[in-house]
Each structure stands twice: as C-alpha cells, then as structure tokens.
Length: 86
Image 1: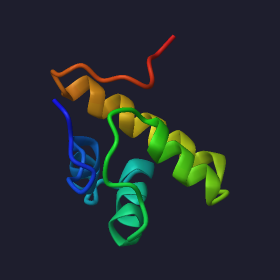
Image 2 (image 1 turned 60 degrees about the vertical axis):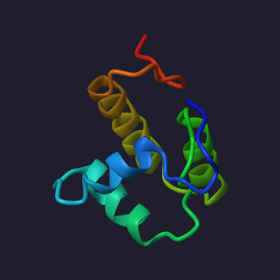
Image 3 (image 1 turned 90 degrees about the vertical axis):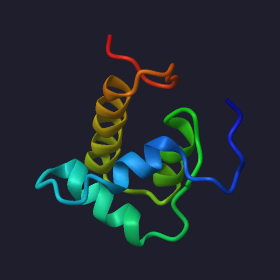
Image 4 (image 1 turned 180 degrees about the vertical axis):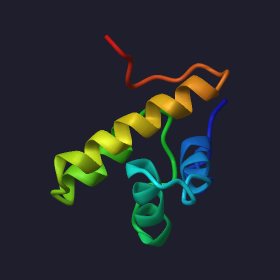
C-alpha cells in the first residue's frame, strides 16, 4: 500500500498511543507528541531514526525508538522493514 506523504504512518499513530506508558517508550511518545517536526510517515525505522540522530539525541532515545519499532512490528501483521533482532 502506498502512503501519501501527509498521512501519518501506522507507527507514528501507534507511538502516540503509548504516552501513558511509564517507560522510555512512553517518554519518547510524549516527546514525539509535542514535536511538530517529528516525521509522520515512514515504512521503516530509518526516517524516524535519522530525524532523532540529526537532533543529536542521547543514545537512550535511539534505543527507545528501536524498542518501540520492534514492539510495533511484533504487533503488526503487515510486512515491516527496517529493524530485526539478530
């Protein structure tokens, strides 16, 4: 399925639903919710990771993103690309 650039990705929508978690993923979700420049679209982890790396965030934020992506991909039945566990 092709996604229009202006439509939020399923990952973005999923992440925003995690704001109640008391965890690094919840903290990331809260930050993303108020960051108007955070990417809304992406079929892999790369656009989200690239954005955070350009902001020079702490490695713990990148780890939270990777953990969130894995949880999202495990809960999603469609094909996800971008990050797999070794």
